[in-house]
Amino acid sequence: MPSTQLNVNHTLHTVSADPDTPLLWVLRDILNMKGTKYGCGIGFCGACTVLIDGQPVRSCQTPLRDVGSQSVTTIEGLSKDGTHPLQIAWQQVDVAQCGYCQAGQIMTASALLAANPHPSDAEIDDHMSYNICRCGTYTRIRQAIHQAAQLNHKS
Image (cartoon, rainbow, N blue to C red; front, top):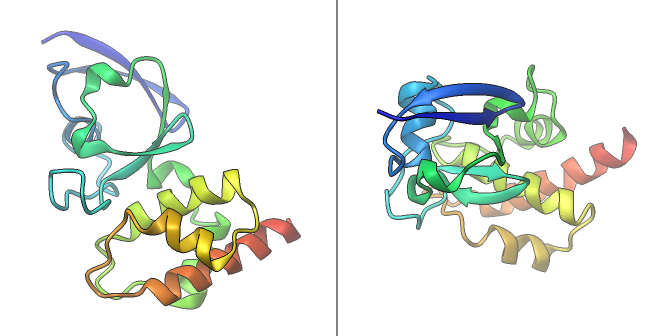
């Protein structure tokens, strides 16, 4: 297997994997980062969303060869201790029911807030529409994003 340097959560890792291996499996099976979830496997649901250079991508559809030297951020890298404003807001609003999609939802929301610190409901709905929540907690997700925006503003 070829070795590849991968920058994940501000740490360089050398991984031995086929360049066609989806990033999801490199994260979960090689680097043992279990926060990124396998959902549908076809890039539709968003459970596997991570950030590459700040942009949300479906890690189940992103081959290792496409990552290169770009910076990958997973839910584990959002904050070391769960104190990112989105993580706090998610808990305060009690967003999760089953919780399976939440890492992907939070990563997508973090990209939104980085680009637009105070999004409208319509902007949130549009940006988040690519992530599916089987439990239907979309109203609470929107509320948590607004709350995180306020927490970001205070810090």
